[in-house]
Image 1 (cartoon, rainbow, N blue to C red):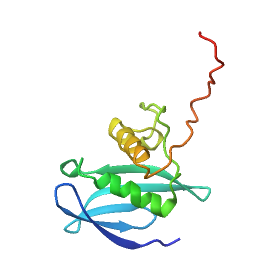
Image 2 (spheres, rainbow, N blue to C red):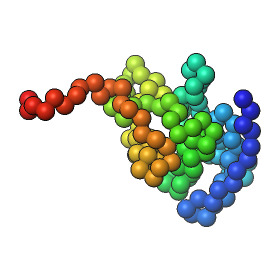
Image 3 (tube, rainbow, N blue to C red):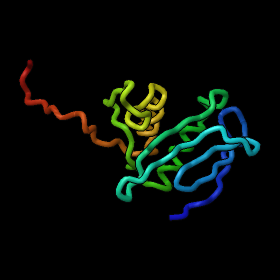
Image 4 (cartoon, rainbow, N blue to C red):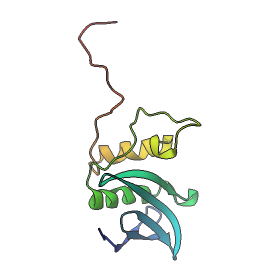
Length: 131
């Protein structure tokens, strides 16, 4: 699939951010990459692999815009880590959210940018009794 297109966004600080939209989403300022959302393909389904925004550009709406663009390209239910997944030395960054990543995705869910996904780690059901 070829989604290649360009998009410009003005962040919360008034900076013009250019996005290249393909299978992955990249953010640039003056032709210098400052952020990216990368995907792997799992049996034809996009799975979030990695994301970042350079520190001097964080908290300005850029990552939220990249997730919105990713939802436009891949749908609102693209694969991503569970909020319950935990990191560790044996885990890759694609298997769990950082604190910042979890906050970003929680924000995007709350603002109807992406859908909340069932948590595969939430296997216990409330049977109505107290433990």
